[in-house]
Image 1: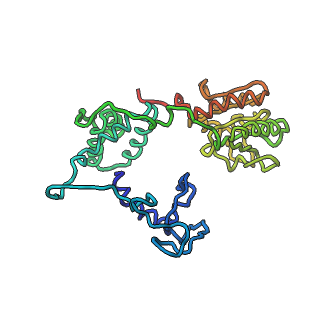
Image 2: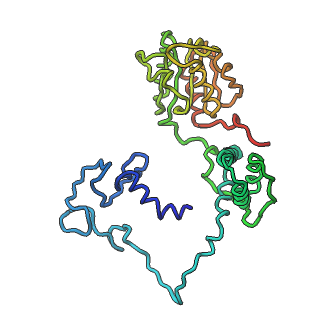
Image 3: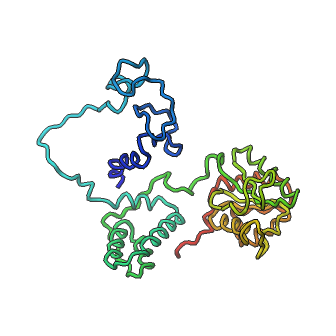
Length: 337
C-alpha cells in the first residue's frame, strides 16, 4: 500500500491543491529548506529571486543549477549499477507477503493502542452487509493476528477463525507507540482554563495560570460565559477536542452543577468540556472551590487528575505540566478482557 501511494499520491496532491505548491502548506512544509523549480500557480507564497525556473540555465547566477553526480547531490544523481544475465518480467516474492509488516506494527503498540485499532476496525466492519465480505475481512485480519480476528469477529457475529500462523512473528519496533514515552516538550500544547466572568477571583486566577503556562510555551485559552476582557472564547464555542488539557479555575463551581443552564451556552456545556477531556485521557485539574467539578465529572482516577484545594498557582501548574508531558492517561480507556 505504501509503495502504491508513493507512485500515485503526487497526482492527488497536484489536483487537490491546484498545483505543485502543496509543499508550502504549513502541515506539509519540511523543517529544512527545500530548493526546487516549482513556480507560480495556486498557493504560491514565496517571492522568487531567480529569473528562470528551469535547469540548467545561463540566466541565474545562483540556484537552481543542474544537479550531477559531483554537483548538487540532487535527484539527478543515480548510484552506479551493473547487471548480468537475462532480464525477465517477474513480481518480487516479497509481494506475496502483505501481512508481516502490519503484524510488526500491531506488536509494537501498547495494549490500549491495540484496543483503539480494534475499535476502529469494529466500527468500519459493522457497516458491512455482505456475509462474504465480512468473512473475507476476517481472513485478512487473521493472517496478521488471530487476536485481531477474534475480537473483530465477536462484533460482526461470525465465528472466530483458527489461527493462520504463516506470517505470525513476535518482532516489534521502537517509536511506533504514541503513549510509550513522555513528550520531549510541552511547548505549543493548548490548555483550556474554565472560568467565570461573574467572579473577579476566577478571572484573576485564570490569568495567573495562563501566565505560568506561557513560561513553558503552552498556549492557554481562558473560557468564559461571554467575551469579557481576558476571555479567549465562550463556552458556547468551546470544545474539549481542541485542547490538550482542561483546568477549572476557582469560584466557578456553579457552572458545573447538575442541570446548570444559561442563555449564554447549551445546558451543561462547561461540565461537558471537563467530562470529554477526562474521557479522552487528557490531564484535567481544578483549584480552590471548583474542585467539586472533578467529582461531578466522574473523574475518579488518580492519574492525570489534579485537584488543589489551595490557591498556589505555580505549584499547581508545575504538577499539571507533568500531566501534559504524559499527554494521555490510558488507564481511563477500557480494554477487552
